[in-house]
Image (tube, rainbow, N blue to C red):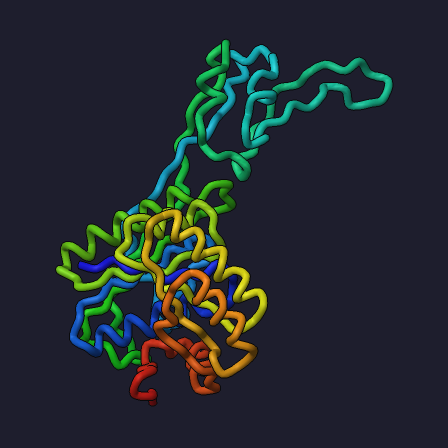
Length: 296
């Protein structure tokens, strides 16, 4: 089984579109494909395909601090040591004339990275561990009226974070692990992983140990700038890269050509702007698109 990531750095260059078009191409070649959406904070592959998320295959949990006020001495150690600044300690004074004293610390889970430092260093043992759900992983066989692939071997795995998280990387890891196990069970030929925007740790978790990565870009200054950044990252990770130039008939491709030459990376695939493709995207019909044979 080949592991392929589709990434790009810059938002809006067409990573999800390319992921789906590549899945369509491979399925039409008779391959078994698992497509995994690892943009866990904003997954949209299912929307572009016009399908539901499907069934829940796994829940993801993380540990968060919970204060036991009966034990807390209000020493403020957790506040001063928290690397994420996810704890603050208000004053008990409510009016200007009142004497100030420390109140109980307050934990902000939306800033917490679940590092565990606070409950390990608390001298009173006043910080307990609370388990909370932070994500879900869904799986779905692509059989819908909107798809020509209803009898094909194409599965969609979607990772989705729950609530506001400081660190969604563990949800990415859980979704990827589930997808890899799922793909092995289905004897898939390819596992395609659609990454999030940027180069943060969640993206890196989707790029590690893959056979190669498609880097999607566009012929604009920002597209070329982020192309250079992501190619530099892939080089550090030891991941082979191939460039997909989206909207290739717009803008100035010489910017992208220069970056490709500088890094010695081939432009493997060019996708010209197409009104039909835009409409298929907007209407959730990308599952019907065959870029190499047009589409209906």
